[in-house]
Length: 138
Ligand SMILES: [Zn+2]
Image 1: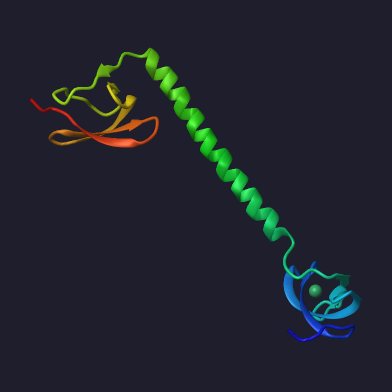
Image 2: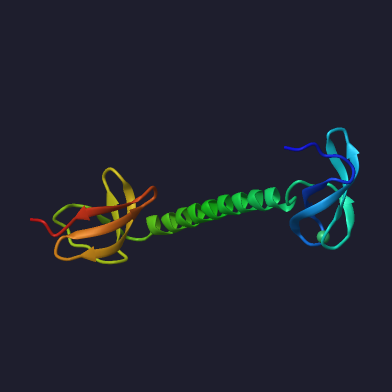
């Protein structure tokens, strides 16, 4: 990287253009530009190497994803709670189940039948995962 001094052209983030553009250094802070002037809009502002909001947006996105995941789980817990009060069938390989049925599996616990795959399989959503189980087997 070439040495930056007052009057040099550097790439900086322009707060007005909202882009990383060529700027002229107006003042230095040690080896770094402190104030720059945008070559595009001629606006003078503090030097920023990159878009300042990029980090904030990423953080926000992360938070949003976390919230969504939590919400989904809560909803599922609520659904489970509701379902445990409803009648549900004990799961056996010989049993016959339909979409929307609630089943109680000896290992996986309570689950909701998502779909019936003819002739003898069902997909069941349990608290931790959706599993394919056998049914209608004698
Ligand atoms: Zn500008």
